[in-house]
Image (cartoon, rainbow, N blue to C red; front, side, top):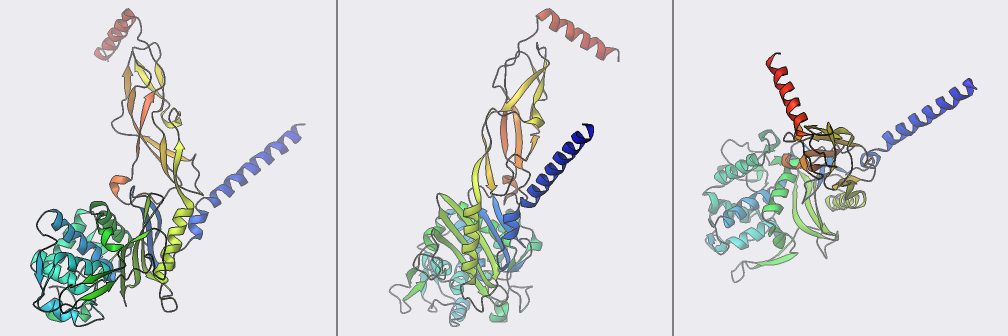
Length: 436
């Protein structure tokens, strides 16, 4: 009988171990299997900053005209600060005019000496990626493009983006080799180009969409007239191939910006609103562009599909639940030495299909109460705990979004002891401290 019991026990242990091993292999199986065919890629939720996917996210790479989402932020900031107006007229100077003569670099014609509104030039940069329009704005805002780039760098620093993750040599993303040397920013080399990591690009996109959501009213336009009433009147077409009616149309896409150069390859920052959720994606240097001129869009579509199909915002534990890490709190002068604690609210978070929702990591917030004094009422707030899924290694985009705090409350009343006993206890404590 003893041998039979030992065999049964050993079998149970072995089956359990195999079960745990299988579960461990399944965790992150979907995320590990899914790959974006690009040098780097990133995806996150615009509202919460939850990261859904990251590949080679911290290596600086060429970003080409994706630079213009940062340039646009600076211009929008000046508009909101009332230091610039949409109707202000900007006369075209020598540098933007020279650039506009090269249709490969700036595909919106500008007339030298003619004035265009801030709105026209802004839209030309976001819709048709007109570098000449962006330079004209940079000169208007900062006096020179070099000073404008310093403003861009300062903004990145404010957002916590490290200098080592960024190389900015102009406001447009053009390689310096295509720009006359007299217009190079002091200190930059003749063949340098703007570079940034996919994570840093995501941070820029987050701030642009969060602070100035009106950018989407521009980025979603498939076409727009430029220079109305001038000799160079021109219909701009949006370079974003995923917008409605375009070759790679995708439901919910309304932005944001393309970028293309020999160094950067095909790049795209996409944003999609579907079922009240806005996803933002970054694809840097999509592979296979030689065979597929829409490689950046097909990879973006796959990434967005992956997020929609596998990530859900759902309840992971509920109000009234006891947490094993924070079960009780001591009570002074009470008829009980401890009081039971429970969650005072439901806990929700982003969960990928292959994550274990029961595998939680919890810790007290520094401000929680160390002990209570009787009488204690049920549902009394005692502090907060941080709760996160142990299986989630991706985290959130910004440091301020990383920790989620939830209220803990008492689960019962604890009455105060008879007053003579309370006094006696206090006297004993005092004596104990006095003669130690």
